[in-house]
Every structure is written in structure tokens, then in C-alpha cells.
Amino acid sequence: MSRFLEVESLNVYYGGIHALQDVSLYIDEGEIVSVIGANGAGKSTLLRTIAGDKEIKSGNITFRGERLPKTSYETVSMGISLVPEGRRIFPNLTVYENLIVSTYTRAHSKKSIDEDLDEVLALFPRLKERLKQSGGTLSGGEQQMLAVGRALMAHPKLLCMDEPSLGLAPIIIDELFEKIKQLNEERDQTILIVEQNAFLALEIASRAYILKTGSVTREGLGAELLGDPSIQHEYLGVHDDTSYEDED
Amino acid sequence: MNLFVQQVVTGLSIGGIYALLAVGYALIYSIFKFTNFAFGAILMCAAYGAYFVTHTLKMTSLVSGLLGAVVIGVIVSLATELLAYRSLRRLKASRLFLMISAMGVNIFVQNLMTIMMSANLRSLDIKMPFNVIRFGKIRIGSLDIFSLVISLIVLGVLWIFIEKTKHGIAIRASAHDTDTAGLMGINVNKISFIVFAISGLTAAISGTFMGMKYAVYPTLGAISSKAFISSVIGGLGSLPGAVLGGFILGVLETMISGYISSSFRDLFSFSVMIAVLVFLPNGILGSGINDKL
Ligand SMILES: Nc1ncnc2c1ncn2[C@@H]1O[C@H](COP(=O)(O)OP(=O)(O)O)[C@@H](O)[C@H]1O
Ligand SMILES: [Mg+2]
View (tube, chains in turn red, cyan):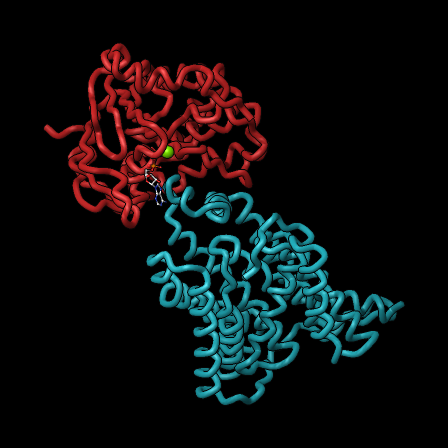
């Protein structure tokens, strides 16, 4: 049987820059998988390629046995949603509109969309108080919750998150990762996270990959990589608490 | 005093026409960040659509004239999007190429129409239910009233569409960032289809009223520069700004024509635009968009 998501020998370029080199990985249904790597390793490129926002030079991505479509909006319909790096909230839309915007092509009934909205608001109660506020007025943490909520409103089978911890205060990050875990445990949401914050990403993941200048250099169980001295040295030592930026 | 009130009403009715034009222009600008120079050609073709229905088919009511214009306006607008712009966007061409393509379409269509219809001025003979309304000593022409009321209705419906429907939300999301809109499941080509259809509709309605006020001729589309000026005054890329700018420009122009001379009108309009660009570069309601192509 084919994997839930399978990436095989993926090569992606930006002009002459070989951003992903023979990257292979897979995700099974119900897993949280993390990809960790330093700045410029190719994490965003990987997610953008999976989301149909960047073309493939060679290699394959299959989702539930099917080839991925070539455009991002069709990929969303197929069941893959992205929480983009830097959140990219629509500041000119209200919080409610930001959530509802990703249901644009959903074939589901109004009722099931409303149910999803209730669920998202139950997960992120702070958004509920701010539904009429414009997206641009939220704090960084609230925007990240909104970005996750917005992706969930497309009812994805696979939720991809690009550095969700970026630029957030430590307590907010803890709260966010708690929610991510909750999503996985209670809703059985399959999740792919790419992170520089290796400690959090390895802790939450069932399995993880290490991406280094465009290539996968290691893979293993989250706990196993977390305990590995060479990884502790390379990814955990440099990213201790002092590397957090403050919330804006 | 009576003259002044009459001038204000005439100004508002011209303003309504400009506001419609400016909204059609600003919608496309807000999403694709380029000036659709083919807008004038669309307006002109639509006015010929009204002429065809009212003159050739002899259906002389205002409704049939407007319908003829809207059908042609929407078709021509969608055709320019599909033939001239979409493939350029697929190649990720810069906005400059989109604008050059738009200018090409404008010149091509204008010349084609001159060949087909000659450069003659044609008057639109549309039957109005009444000629003038009198309020005491104030007389207001039916064309002014109808164009103002219809413009306001269309603007109101558009406002509801943009603010309250899911298509409107998707349009506003795309106006902020088409890439992120795509990542959220929005087919930006579908949005562009909707937006070009709306733009064709607004151009058609303004084109019909312009044709009724003046005449229908192949360079009628030059009036679309007023859409650009209105948009600059109100704030480029802002839809409320476009409406506000349209009404301000309409009233100012009518005052200039009425109290000074109509030969100063266009000179004045462009001077206002330049003054706004210099002293209020984001217009009245605009957000900080710094290059105004
Ligand atoms: N739009 C782009 N144009 C050119 N090069 C890019 C672009 N985006 C990313 N890159 C390059 O691709 C490599 C991987 O980038 P990225 O996927 O953003 O890494 P990460 O998300 O891990 O920080 C880097 O060398 C980066 O400079
Ligand atoms: Mg990145």
C-alpha cells in the first residue's frame, strides 16, 4: 500500500541554486513528522513544493497514492494545507473572513463549514473574541493561531506548518505546540512541521528528518534524535532559550 | 443659487459615472497592480453595443441600451483578460509587459472600430420616461437623474458583493496577496474572471451614459483617463477611494465648466491629479502603494 504522503528523490531549483537535492521522506496517516534544519536548509522550499507553490525539477510527490496537482489551490482541494512562514494573515480582512477565506473552493455544506469553524474557535478561544477585528491588529501569537485556524478551515487531511514558532515569545510557543499536539491527538490530524527550533519540533514529533543544505542527512524517531549527542551538539546547543525573539 | 444646485446635481451624476469607471479600474489594479489601458476600449465597445441595440435593433428603452452595452462590455473585458493578460501572468511577466499589452489592445480595438464603424459621431437615441424634473425653479434633466440613480444602485450592489459574499472575501484576499490566496485554496484565475466581468460591467454602464451625454465614437474610451484620475485622488487600489475620487472629480469638473469654461475642464482635472500625486501621494483613502503605474 502507498504511503499517506511520499516524497521521492525530489530535486528543486531556484535558477542555478539547487535548493532540494534528492530529498526523500514519507508521512503516515495520523503522524506528526518534523523536518529540522538551519536557516537556508530548504525547509520552506520543501513545504512550498508539497503545497504546489513551487515546481518540481525531478522526483515525485504522491499523496494517498495520487500525484499532486500543479497549482496550490488544487492541492488545497486535494487535502493539503499550509500555514506559511511568517503567517501571512490577510490584514485587510477581519479575523472571521481570514478563517472563512480558505473555504472558498470547499465542496462541503455550510453546516460542515460551520462545524469546523466552531471547532477552530474552541481550539483557539482568543480568536472568538476577535472575530470582527481586522487580521492586521492581532498580536504575533494570535496571528499564528489565526494562520493555523485558517489552514484548518480548508479541512486538510495533511496540515503543513512552516516554522510556527518563528518570532513568538516562549510561553506563546508552548501554548501553540500544546494546541498542535491536541489537534493530533484529539482530531487525528496528520501534521508536517518544519522548524529551526529543533527541541520543540523533535519533542512533538513521532518521527523526524534533518535537512542540511538541501539534503536529508538523518532520519529517525523524534525521541531518538533528541537524545543523539551529535544532534544535541549541532541543533540543540545553538538553539537554546537565548535564541528566541520576543513577541512583537 | 438655483444654478449652483443644478450644477451640483449634474456634477454628482457625472461623478457617479466616474465612480463606476474608477471602481472597475481600481478592482483590477488592486489585484494585479497594473493599469488596464484597454479599459477605454472596453467602454467604447460597450457604448457601440448600446448603439447597436437601440439604433439597429430599434429597442430604444434605457434598459435595452444598458443590457446591450453590458453584454458587449463583459465579453470584450473577458476576452482581453483571456487573450492578452492570462498567458503573460502564467509566464510571470512583469507588470510593465501587462501594461504594454493593454496599450496594444486599446490601440488595436480602437482602430478596428474606426475601420468597421468609421470615425463618425453617432448619437444614442434612448427613450427616457420623462425629460426634466422640476423642484421649484430647479430643473434637473432625466439623464442626470437616471445616471446618478443607476450608478448608485450598481455601486451599492457591488459594495455588498465585495463586502458580504464569499467571492468578495476572496477578491479582497487576492488584492492583498495573490500567492497566499492561492495557498488558501483560491483559484486566482477564477477571481480574475469575476473581476474582469465586473470591470466590463461598470465600463459598459458608464460608457452608455457617456454616449448619451455626448455621442458614441471610436475614441470615446479616452474618457477612461478620468477613472485613473479619480482613483489617484481617492487612493490607488482603494475601492471606496475610487468612488470618493469619482464624485469629487465629477463635481469639481462641472463647477469649472459651469463657472469658468468647459475648455479648462480637462486641464484642470489633470492638474488636480498632479497636485494630489505631489502633496498627497497615497490619495485620500489610499494605503502606501508607492509606484503608481
Ligand atoms: N525565491 C527564491 N529565489 C532564489 N533563491 C531562493 C528563494 N527562496 C529560497 N531560496 C534559496 O533556497 C535555499 C533554501 O531556502 P529556504 O527553503 O527558504 O530555506 P529555509 O526555509 O530552510 O530557511 C536557500 O539557499 C535560499 O537562499
Ligand atoms: Mg524558511
